[in-house]
Image (tube, rainbow, N blue to C red; front, side, top):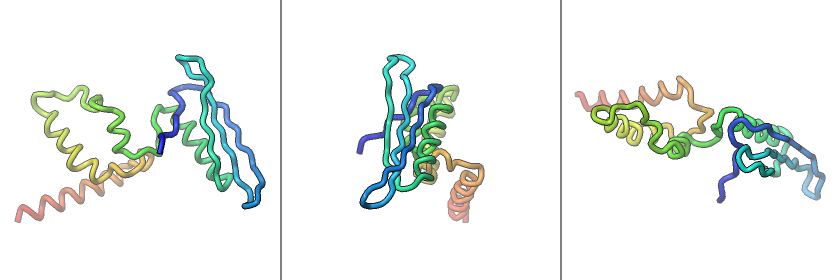
Length: 141
């Protein structure tokens, strides 16, 4: 499966949603287009949806990506992979980088990596921490 193109940060989007009647009922064709800020080529993406609400939610997701630079629907693990080593900027490589890397790899991504970025909240992080702490306490005796 190929990854859907996302609009670059800060571009103005042109949106078009149309209803299409067919033998299987109404489907909704949504298209989002933009001009790439570097190449100045017209780019875009389109998708069919089963309902108008689904089409509008998809358009809002792309609008959010253009506004923030982050696809809120992508899983946290994909976002971290996209960042590469940039997440560690400002961390002292001689003292805290190794434990932070291990914590990300062994705790954060297994517990939260499957969740979409838009679902990251203080509550979900608190629940993950509670689970980690309960696992640690069981070894303390």
